[in-house]
Length: 402
Image (cartoon, rainbow, N blue to C red; front, side, top):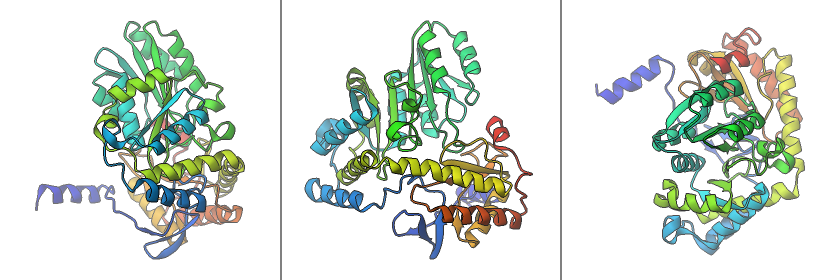
């Protein structure tokens, strides 16, 4: 037996083995999963735009006009007119001076943080930030302080320990596994007061298209437009495409062009993805009802899950975690739900802390009310079939503190 085979056996024994599940057809409210028609409750296609006819047509048109690939990095020959068009549209949407496209949200966070922080600075990072933020901090080789989840007092205490070091405070705005929202106003205020200066980076991946006026995100909802140094967003969730962006002042954008390694050393985003994102952004602006529908659907599913006994108080967005505890139990609930026609993926360590394995539900604006009501009932039955009694498991608040 090889060392790789032994590692795979260890993962299986711990209930942490993963396999790819194959979906046939586009991402919609219902999909074909391994040949079975199921309700999709774990996709980040929040506004239902990934399979929208206008988005598809725009991506196809971009492929015909500019080709399938950009062919080079942004600084060589990979920057095309379509990239500039989307950057201008996103800067206007986020109400910033400039925008810079990246190949993915992971690359954007790694690039921004490694460019802004260094050995002479400290990065203050929320305990539940995305892995891309953690890895970006590592690449920066900065001193790191991990503050307790959504705890401004702990952040203030940490910043007070190093008053003479420049700081970067970085946080998700909506946390991808818990569905709660960062205390952005307090974070910005702490940054203003830091003696050595502090920049604020906010990852709006799960807030763009979901929160704020016109779906502009949690920063806009908090009234902090112009107060955050870099707003990172993704094209691969509510905007239904692929890629990411950083919105900021023009000077900052020029600095990132010259310093962010993923911009310098990776191929530019492909024209079809950029064209699709442009069309999706137009739809968000033209049809604000999609954002309102997403919020209404999330509230509806929370209410229905509460009736089934699930504890959902920790979530205030379209992401709703059903924390069950151990990895094997989460997988049993997931498989039981699949048997009842609902696909809600089990999330296990290291994605979430040990003891907080869960089903991570994600609502879409394109779900119908009846679909969500039926899904809540199916999840309640699935939990009981798997040996988990809703209401008796770990509360979400406890899971966040774990």
